[in-house]
Image: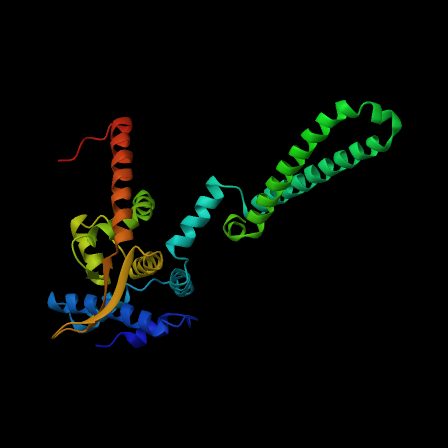
Length: 169
Length: 112
């Protein structure tokens, strides 16, 4: 007894490559039911009817379920999505966070450079010259800060441009 | 029986993983074993069993392959993967906790 034709007739055409395998497997299941019925003394026609009764009435539903199950996502992706939804900010949120940080660093660097330029401007002012001694300490402090901000900015931008960008964003 | 249907749906993964724990089995054998072990209370039909097996296979919990044994027809056998074994242990623990709590709350007599 070959149930493949029955299964194929019962299913709507599946648009997945493994359709022949699925038909074979379901037909095998019906064959087992048939063999079991025959072994218990059931006449052939009744055994066939019992086997075919295992196929659900909702043909479209069965075909749909088989297709979607065969196309369902691997666990790795599903888990990653679920974790991402539950535990971490979304991709766009992460992107916004890093973009904000980058802008913040740019603004900090620009502010530092402006302060530095202002100081040199004051040095050219005769009135400011008189306070040169006081400004000298401020100048040195600003230079240190500028170097530090510049190095920090450089590190951050390198991180954003480097491999970390791919994994972090 | 509607309650059975809902409970079965929620515990289907666990049942399938559990019957594959000992050795690899084909679809009909899985359904038969669940039917026998549950005393006919829990039954899987073609329409629910195979989509579930394919989904679990896609998730990497079970591995399916066609085997042709001597004197038998070619069949697709499923075996538990390492990831599936881990899921089985997690689900067992989770169900154990849930059933113990339910037993205490709903005053269900302990079985056996």
